[in-house]
Image (cartoon, rainbow, N blue to C red; front, top):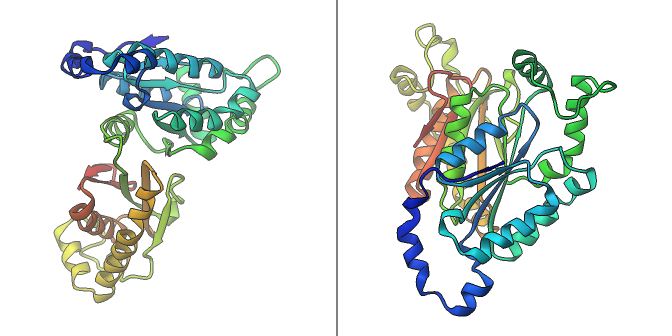
Length: 325
């Protein structure tokens, strides 16, 4: 159902700005002023949380709109020229016909061709995590029935939403993410992103815990000297002063920081020219505690000088997973 912005009056000053538009513009609408965020993903992965965050940021949110009504809905918003509804959040999921779901990528592209700034966000989680979440909440999966078990429904939904995840601008895996971390990610990377800016996140991880599912680039720094083998550094992490001092003194570590930073500084502008909205860089060591954390922080600081706000996330440090450099 529709969720109106909590403070539509906050848009009043912008409404005055648009009052001087031409008569032709008022009849056809100006699609270039609309920002549309489409939130899709697996049931139980956090789509409702994402939409509530957008709603708190004064987005006009509609959950579970039929795919075939999306274009007409956006067209109506465009014609009305109501600034209180120019930031829109739409929830699309598997409760649509398979043929309609398959058309979502083409539909998104058509909206972009019309000048609408459109982000497609996809949330997912491991099957075992989803099974646990449904078991704890006792909610019914939308695709379960008398002949379809919960695990079968999750597999069916993954298959059904395949075309959507393949076209997503940003994929967020919530398997190891709590509700507060997800809210922060949606708020900082999606809701508050300037519509023309590239949102860059650099995250550290441990290879023994698996690769991040949402990474565009993955850098392996396991070849570097490991503070873990220093008895006084083992229980610390890459943000602690003693570990920083140890890695600062290693020439190959500094060479790795310089090489990764130089590579990204060269290629990030190409992604911006390609009109990408999101870029996620993952840096991994064995356990995700020392080397990857240190290098993620160092690269974030380096890139931040040229590209502004960089989001630094440390997957294996629960006390401070998501920071802003």
